[in-house]
Image 1: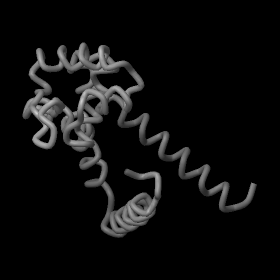
Image 2 (image 1 turned 180 degrees about the horizontal axis):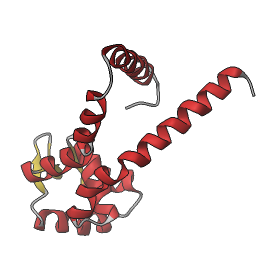
Image 3 (image 1 turned 60 degrees about the horizontal axis):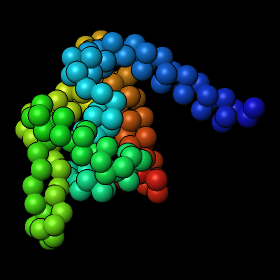
Image 4 (image 1 turned 45 degrees about the vertical axis):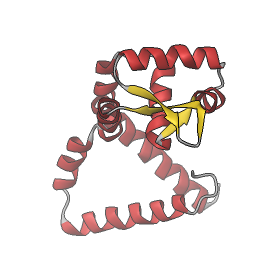
Length: 149
């Protein structure tokens, strides 16, 4: 194993340890949400995309349109998503997050930020600059990754 490969493995291992340390804080909103995995996947897709047709959701989730209809019906009943007419094609119904759905997904996505802030508050300024620089480098690399949406 080269030094570069060893460094990558050490970084990946440290990242996994951080994920475990924050897992409890991050899982809390998931457990409180009372969602099935397909419902959560649907909400996440809508959070990332803004809106999608039933056919798009079916393709992205790898399920039939009938299955998507059932998932969306249950999310509508929980007031997490709504359906509306596509202004470009009135035959198509778009599904999008409601305000409540948006708040839920933001809570899930940002869960653990308070704990992260407390951790960062314990670092001195030089260490904070190192963390900020490392994160900036990672964000820059991710934003130029052709597989990043």
